[in-house]
Image (tube, rainbow, N blue to C red; front, top):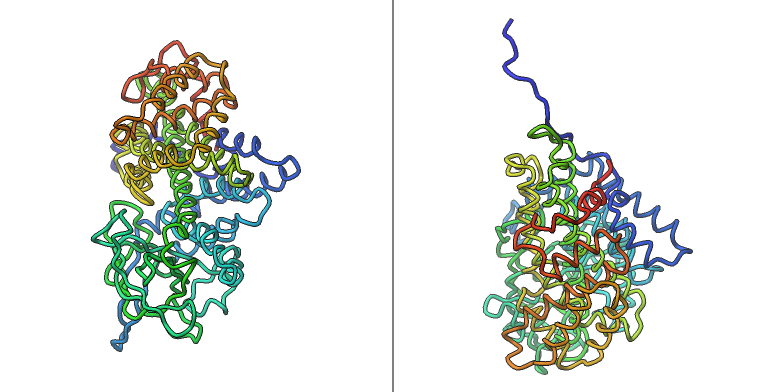
Length: 544
């Protein structure tokens, strides 16, 4: 009998069978901080149930299957009739259905709706980020539709429903509906005013016929889409239903699906309109203003999505290093690895804390909070999404060669990590939006300064960063060339102020030292060795 050539040991057990929400101390603390005490048991129970589902072996397998079996385009049926459908793996539908039933499209009319949804979105995106796109756009379509009370009354109950109905049929026959969005065209990109899709008015008031194309249209099997097109009065927002009221298919020609770096479970399509029926949303010529609230909501979801990806990457890295032994001890106990893990944990906690603060501002709805969102959302979108790729790559390195292997799950996170920085307006677009807020809306800067000012005097490095930021803002000459620098500093100071106020002292101390005080290097793992890094790492450890 042949002997065994090797035994398997010192391999890390999979991070499975745990509560993704409750194991995230930064996230649970943020939810409790902003939550009305009367809702505490309800919301924490709801999020913990979703967290257990997200951490289960079955749901994690669904995420892997959805990623490994990307959608397929079917332009015609077997008889040659045009059908323009996309086929998804059953696991995609399971994930999307679970997301809908968990309330990820139902924030607008629930108590603490945005806060509980933000936490749930951050948890659920850690399973498989692809299904986050239709959930995000459906959620974000509501404020745009509210510019037309009749449309809102018709569509909002469907969009905020917790029922997932995947069939293509008239929306009036469905218990729940999903929405997509189409703004980008091949010749314009982020410059949506360069769009050439035309809208010709029809006899019925408010209805039009669209002709043109969209270069990116995600979730093309949705029930409706908000799109921009050139009407006689200028660029205008329209609702394009996938299926018309009489049951016939609207003209929605899927030319091809994009072959993307990541986010592969989600279908992103090129769409042609050729006599496509549409309903106007808002006034002619005010398309950007109409759809801007949808864009703002999806930008916050980009922040949440990146925070979720960073959290999962850090959780995997800390989990691995807690079990893996090397050079005579646990990797997590080695001073240099502990420094790397702590540095990654700081980035993750700062992103989560900022994202949940912004979600709470949506729930508040007051003038001060709306002004804060105007400047903080683009700054956060700029900075948090920019930090996601280096966190994912460094976390993969913590696993060594294992982190470069698909089975570890880290390569999927690495491929996904640049997405949220690119979608819904890339870095320059966000930085310029910050400038617009500074130049046109003085209330936005006042609200921001009042927010960060609540932490003044608690940490000298934060105080110094606030002073330096004010100096930057006092000199706006050549400001466009410094827009990225300003957006970065605004986000970092806001993160620092929140951590100083709410995080454990060792977390706030380390963040202020490295991110605001200049006592850290360009790479992760360069925190001052005198800090309490062991406590920072322990706080980030997912307890399975």
